[in-house]
Length: 83
Image (cartoon, rainbow, N blue to C red; front, side):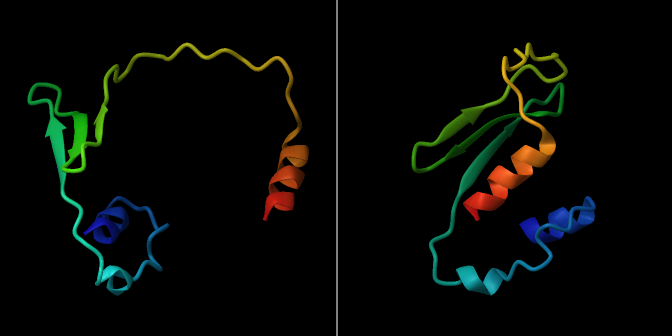
């Protein structure tokens, strides 16, 4: 279902996903709560006790810029060294 949804919205990151790989695993049941007025996702919860609440759609977050930055090429080098 997730793979089909991703394809429908133009995301192709899951194209190589094989659902049969997960055949022996237990099903994950989620409860998605959507606000009826705004039609936006407000909460995700699972039977295992996991709860995630979303709020503030459309509000510009306050972001503090880092004091020390690195170039994109340096970042790429550092990420490549991890692999």
